Image (cartoon, rainbow, N blue to C red):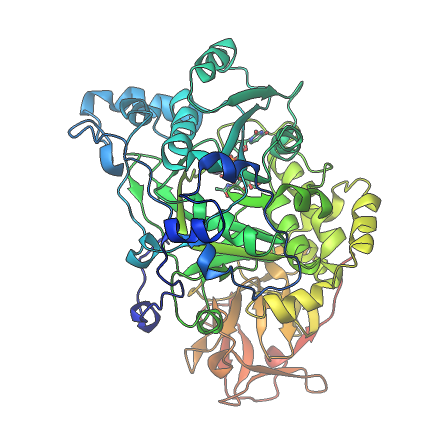
Length: 576
Ligand code: UD2
Ligand code: MN
C-alpha cells in the first residue's frame, strides 16, 4: 500500500510560503539583544489563537530551527541509516519462534543500536522551512503493554536524539501492567541515566491503551502532549512542524506522516505523503489517496499541512488544555481500538482541525496481528469500543456499522450519557455536517434510499459479497437476514454499495463484479424500479439477473425480459 507518489500531482511545484529569516536580527528587534536562548523558550506561554484557521505567524518571528547535531554515524553497524538487517539462515528457527512474542522480528531489532541513525528523508523544501521562534514545550507520552526492550528504548532515544532540547519537557512511559521482568525496576534504573527527564508510570491493572494514555496525560507538565506508540523512531525534524501548527491555532491536532519500520528487517521505509486517513463501514481506520480537492486547497504544495478526515491514532500532538476541553478520551473504551476515530470525529465536529504535517516523519512498526491478550476477546472489545463511538458521534450512520458487522448489535455498549452530554456541551456539529464538509469522499453514502439485503424474487436468494475483494464477481446465496456480506446500500448517487465496493457492470454481458466505488456513475450507476422490481444498469439499460444456468451463484447483466429472475426486492429485515 505504501507506494511512492505516482501521477500528475506529485510533480506539482512546491511553493515555499516562508520568507528567509535572520534569527539574530529578529531577536534584537524583540529586545532580547541576541539569539533566542533555549530557557527563554521554555518559559514562554505561547499565544493562544483559537478562531482564525488561516492566520499565519508573523514572519519576523520565524526561524530556521537548526537540526540536532547528528548522532555519529556508526558506519557498518547493523541497521544504521535506517537500513534493514538480514539474519543468518541458522537464526531462522529461533527468529520464527520469537516472532510471536512481539509480532515483529525481535532478533533484528536487538541487533540494531538503540541510537541508530536514520536518513533525512524529508522533502527538500521541508529542510529549509522556518518555524516560530517561540514554541510550546511538549511532553512525550508513550504507553505500552509488554513492549520489547529494544523497540521501546529506541523510540525513547529517537525522541532524545532528534528533538530540540528546548521543546522537550519530559518523556512519560506508561507501563500498562506488563508482566515482562525487564520492564520492571530495570527500566526505571535505565531511564534514570537518560539525558532527558524520563519517568515510568504504571497502571495498577491492565487498563488498555486509552486509559493508560489518560494516566500519562495527567502527569504531563509541558504545554503540548505528544503521544507515540512504543515501537517508533522519530526522524530528523519531526517535532517542529507539529508544534508550529499548534502555535498558530491551538485547536489543531497534528500527526506526522507515519513511515514504516519493517516488522521483519527493521528497515525504515518512507511512506507516501499523498495518503490521508479514512474509515470503512466496519469502522476500520484506512489510508486512502488524498483527493485533488485537498491538493488544490494546499495550492499543490506537498509540504503544506494536510487536513485529514481521521487519524491512525497513535502518533499526534495536541495542546494539553485543548485535550481536556475536548473531552480527552472515552474512559469506557478498553484495551485497543475505536479511540482514533472517536477522537477524529470529535475534533472535526466540535470545532477543531486535524492535520497531517508532511514535513514531520515518524516510523512505526506495523504489525499484521496483535501480540498481546485482549481480556474478554478481541472482537468483543473492539465491537464494544466501536459501538460506543457509533452511538455517540455517528447519528443514523451508525446503522452502516451495525448492518455490516452484525456481531456489534449484541455487544453491551455501556453508559454513554457522559459522552453525549459532552457532545451537547461543546455544541458539536452533526455527523452529516462532517460527511458533507470534511469527508465528502467517505464510503458512507450521504443520502441513500435503502440499506439492507437485495433478494431475487425467483430464487429467493440474496446478493452476497462473499467477502470477496475488489474486482471479483458478486455472489448470490441463501438469505440469512443477518446483514454482514448481504448488506447493500442503494444510494442517491445510484450506487449499490457494500462498504467501499460498488456493484459494477464492467462486463457488458455476464457477471457483475464488486469494484471499489468511484462515484463517477458509468458502470456503477443503477436504477431500481419499484413497480417492475428491476435493477437496471443506467447506461446500457440492461437488467440485473440471477443467473440460474451456468453458474447459479452469480448475478449477471442481461437484456430485460420481464422474467422473475430479473426481479428483486429491497426490503429490510434487520433489527437495529
Ligand atoms: C493503531 C495506533 C494505536 C492505536 C490503535 C487503535 C498508530 C501507529 N497506532 O494501532 O496507537 O490508536 O490503532 O486503538 O497509529 N497498549 C497498551 N495497553 C494495551 C494495548 C496496547 O498500553 O492494552 C499499547 C501498545 O503497547 C502500543 C500502543 O498501546 O504501544 C498501541 O498499540 P498497538 O501498537 O498494538 O496498536 P497499532 O499500532 O496496531
Ligand atoms: Mn503500534
